[in-house]
Image (cartoon, rainbow, N blue to C red; front, side, top):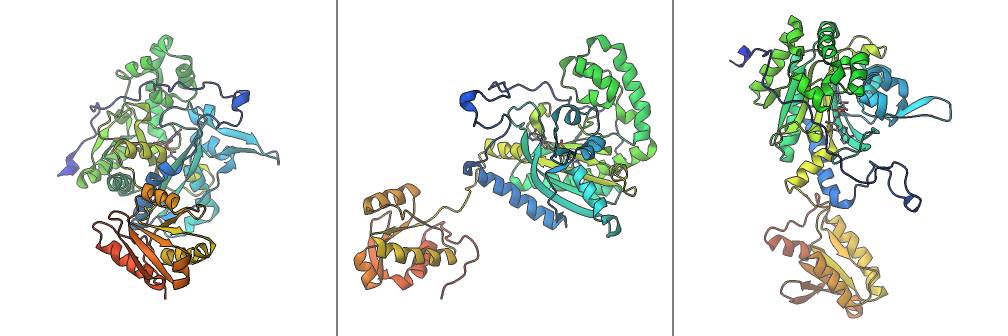
Length: 472
Ligand code: HAM
């Protein structure tokens, strides 16, 4: 029975991320004078070439969120700085180096959210959700901001989708959230595995941290200034270090799993049992602590299965339990658990696998006009096709038939509808089969139905975008 699995004290694991390779580009944050309207470093435009994948991610996430009864929330981008300082914690890279903080015109210190879990907890308390039936399950998507070193898969504005579940402390909640993340990847066609660890409660972590500090103190002279600072300010963060020397030292460092109290161990083992039950592949990683201070018990990350999980940018998502967060923000003690996925990283993984859906349905029909009277009919006809759910393209701005047929050819449509002066007068229209060049003249009032029928006969062509609304 899967329940027999013990938390191995020295599990075979992957190491923490190695120092990421910088993408050499303009190193300066200050745009050169001639480039003063360039994008800020680490910011990007997501153009239509990418939107097909983004739509796919959004649609997949939404349908899974609905299936698991998570309610959509939209949370503000700007929050009081204190919300993040308190929850993510001083001594984390996010708070010490990466947050976009400024004073607003009311002289208040505000921050562009680096993540949304703290905001979700603030909303949970602020809207009295403690009094609703628990768990309260929310999901969100939107941009986050971190003034991190930009490189492939790491931006200063990036998008997340996130799931948060408040009010239940059972290990099944942790496991189900992991299953939800796993399912999202599966539905997207990406093979991922879960890296998982437990960092127990704040109390049992104290004894571990004392041991960890003692260990690294012996090697203090080898540590970078950043890691020395971590050791002093927030020693758990040394496990996130990207320094080669520190990573090597980690081999002999005490592991947090050995310091878990019985309750924490039991909680963790149950999560692992549930995951085994549903056959979600996971790897124990005792170095995984995640870069935010609010976590308790289970922490996890999703990495591509064919990735060793050692590259800094390999985490497509991550999360964990955060039983102290609501209380920290002044609410009643409330257990909670959640995760967030990075949309840019998922999009890159999809692209690498050649998964590149179209941003919008490809039109199968083109409308070519000759003169203003024909344009007028065309405008109306365009609406008729749209209402029938058949994507149709046009080049109303072009005058010559040849130029319009060139566009139609480039688009690769099956049929072009040609409407000249004569056809306008006769209330007819020409349907041209673009492959054979054959043309037929039909009643303009019947053309929508006829074209739909023809498209249905064409192999593999589904002309319908959405459920069609038939015109009278
Ligand atoms: P996080 O690990 O900081 O967790 O971020 C989650 C995911 O966002 C990462 O795994 C990564 O895919 C993506 N991500 C983070 N930083 C960047 C960046 N600079 N550029 C591109 N993608 C990035 C959180 O934010 C927690 N709020 C997750 C959570 C929800 N924990 C509990 N509930």
